[in-house]
Image 1 (cartoon, rainbow, N blue to C red):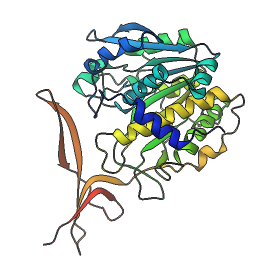
Image 2 (image 1 turned 90 degrees about the horizontal axis):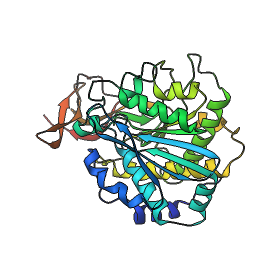
Image 3 (image 1 turned 120 degrees about the vertical axis):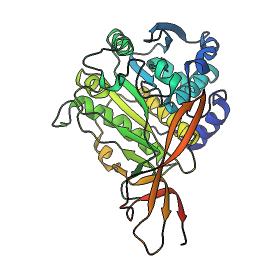
Image 4 (image 1 turned 60 degrees about the vertical axis):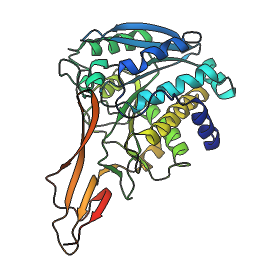
Length: 349
């Protein structure tokens, strides 16, 4: 497998990171003025309107036979993938080395960087009609779901990248590390059988994990492959469109998800470069060496020595009076001897 050197990735990210995007609350207003700078190289089009009539934009580039579709922020409060995509756009727009020449020669890339601009505006998972787009793949009650399906069927990609964020509760099984990046090759039906498409999806994930182990060893997890009948990735995989789920998670002291953003960008570039250079996607078994995600973390734990009455807290994030606010709430969990706090405070009584 062609694994990109970490020093190259670090220097590339430092040079090409989209500095106007920062933090967890990214709205359409934050990206609206960025599209014009890509028009010289990309085909930039408005492909529809959200329920509240905000634009949904698409970028397209490349001339290759391998077609790859990306979308981010189908959950409005999951923006790390969006930031990573704009970092990737900057690379395509500003870098012309052998890696990017190979990608654009072998691949045609289509991006929807913000599928749910209404949810993004108010920092909610759902759209303006309270629909979870990631559970609307069958009914397609939402305008945004119809738009994504129309792009999928018109473009007929060989691979899809479905970009999400996961909560800070997840760690890497067998470690005391948070799951900074987690991957999933979605199941196509209840038995979770290893179809040809799933194996090909796993092959790409193996390449991304191999790269990440060189920079954040033991901070990569594998998301549960339980079959969800109405989920987007599961249905796209079932329809024959290999779908790679990337879940951007917590990194120590990284509540703005800026370190996670970097490793999401690394993963996107490695995944695309692997697809560009690969003709046989049969090697998949190392996918199962990636540890499972494990719900072992709280944001804060108060430890009381010689007592079983430790107390845990989680951040609740919301928009109040137009500002992003994180509020620390006490949880109902009290069996904390096997749990870990991203921050732990010893309370002496």
